[in-house]
Length: 154
Image (cartoon, rainbow, N blue to C red; front, side, top):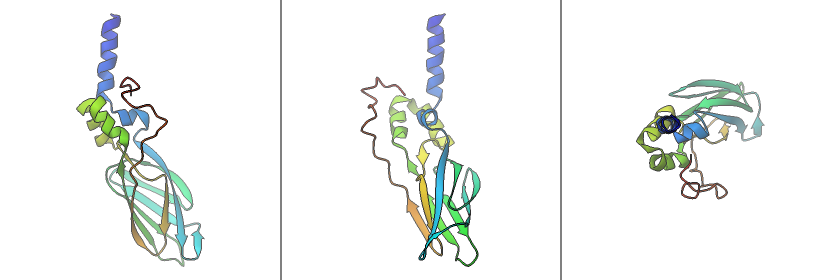
């Protein structure tokens, strides 16, 4: 009986995505607004991607749903031109490890739910501009054990 319980638990683990277990499908982020004259406080910002829309007043934070799709940000404040920014998502490094260790099903779950993707934690929108921010690909954490060294554990 104990062996069948262990096998069942292992099978369930294979049906979930590694990135979704580690960091989930939501991501907290902060939006700041600036102009040529410096920091702009009190701008009303709308963030949206294919998973939903979120609103905040700058500087402010919210939690968005991760997605492969771009995050569009529009910030408005009286006496300032609208600031528009398109933020590209990046694929998290653990998503590639999941393909090797978690299998196709785990990788598929992470891609479908958005857990495999990330946006920058702090985003600055410049009022009066229309820009594109490409999220840098995260560098591997040298303090984190490699999959091979950790026994392929997730």
